[in-house]
Length: 486
Image 1 (cartoon, rainbow, N blue to C red):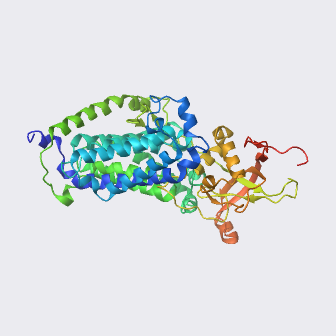
Image 2: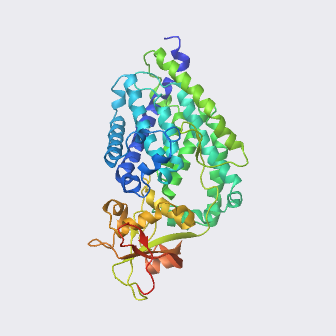
Image 3: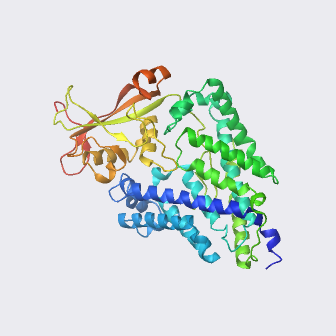
């Protein structure tokens, strides 16, 4: 099919495809490791939101995936590690060492495995970057390997995905919180974002005029630059470079799992690598492969109707999938910005009676703030799913529905799987008798406070979030608030 190859193929993008595929495999690896280390405690047989219970209520057509067939802890953990091993193999080049059909099968299996986790993951997998990984991963199935030149159509579909990620995020901000239009959102955002990073304190302490510059530059990057991605070279390469620089800035300022890293990866589809590599020669494109790519292109363009309609709507929604396979989605984040940061701090005691003199000891999370002297850590692209849900829970008790009480139960039992999600368990030898939750207001310390106290945070008690509770003692495993005099 040599007559088809010249207009179907983009040999000048060979290096871009190589880097894109290897980097995407690396993100898949991180995602599967996150599942291997967290899924059982969050969603396993004794998890906070057991998959088995969820899938009894939700039919396959609504949430397709392998776990409808089998969802025990051993199987889900095996799927997570299988995905991690497969992703690692692709990362080191296995997909380029096998025939084209086998490489496509490897990418398809990665996508199917991760789809199973996302569609069973409920609130713990309800983030936009889950759908973004699935959409990018689906397109990666059809990117080919070293046997064929990069297909023009799939490279353009990845550009189209990058456009929707950036432009959708820009629109939701411009239409949302007025602080984005007033250029003042970053007066607050570095401090109140879900999981600050080690540099967030320093970003927050930048002069306000620089915060306004940051917001203005963000508007340009998300509302103007995306259109340049769709223009001829070298404009598209320059636009991709601007997207990458902007995303790296976000990487430095906070922890957003693999959202920023994956946006960088898919932006590489717009980078013409021929100035570095020349125009390599590839074998003729197989007919079956070309036909399949054309079919997928028509499918994606057809499914794009709903995300485009959403972007153009005044009622634009963020991070929504319009099909259960997450093939074409809509994206966006932080249409509103919280002005103050609140955190739920969990405390336990081993005393039998709760009195005014009871000594309480704090649990500490890996990522979200608790100890005011602890510098926020860098975890992205790894996703600490419980920490993120705790941030939402502090915004409103409505976000605790379903999972928070089982979480408290597991802490009262010193459940090993649950405790692995935390940084510090203050009761290593025996479970606590009671647990309570307090709501604090956190803010970054000033430069003067930082020098005097060594603390990164200052916190003020707002109210009791959960009164002291204990295991009921009647064998049902539920938690109960102690009665008077206990």
